[in-house]
Image 1: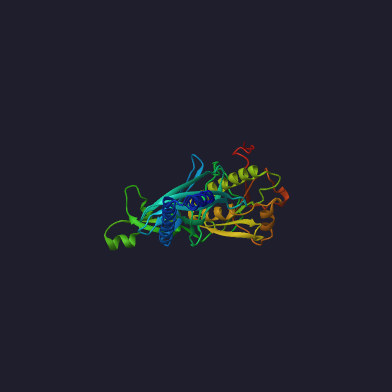
Image 2: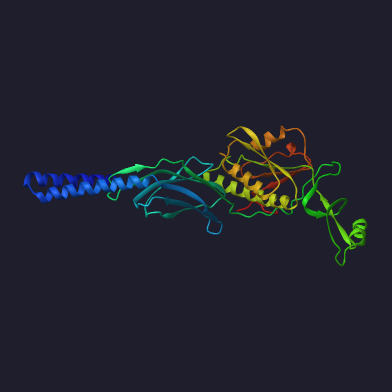
Length: 369
């Protein structure tokens, strides 16, 4: 833009001096033509700019887990019947847990009543919450002399990057407290608790005759079988250790976070599939409190990941564990996800119902690479 203005100013000055010193009417006509064309282009660009919007499309934003690339889509919509020669904007991309920002400037054109997409991608090797924001939108004339800023609310989109590593926590068996039988039942899975009926269905060959509902069967003149419910734990807690920045460089912290999130996804996939309502905790150094989330479905797991990945991970060891131990009450099953390369709890501090999940170790307890 600055170069265009300097070139334009030099051109006008040269034509003006040529006209003054040579008294050439050709130079005068050229000078008037250049000024008129520039003014007309500026007026048309200003008129078209009133109908321009630049947004970030959710449908066009995605993450490729194979190539480990996050892709955003900036949508430029020109609602005017006039073309726009130059549309400029700045895309700011940042990791929600970091202060650094990647800025990329884009320039394109927009035809009349046009809708254009520009794809923005970046490498995402580890789990993260990536934010893309569209700022400093402007419209320029065809000569690049006049610039008109577009006033609109900043378009922002968050994209959740899943972990690169894969954890399997199926072999972890929770240690439970001896608490009376639960009276809470799964609403998604069948079980064998004969005290609670899950659903009724028609008889199929091979069904146990003891499960036939004789009262309804006689009323409907067909065999109806009872499916029984599955009792679930009244309370299950998962604690994620957020103190992952102990003695590590940014790359190491990212790797630790990736492993912890991988273990969390694997565990919650198991618990949600079993229909187990779970409370998830982690310490937030920003708000200086213990954050609590009620997880009952897969969408709730994603919400926990977004909140965790947006935090600035502290360097003081075991903040989540220390804050959690101050809470009163217990749970039938309690999982603690941490990374031993950052810090590990002392055995004397552990409760008798805790199940440790060290994301830095494989299933045999050996440190992972």
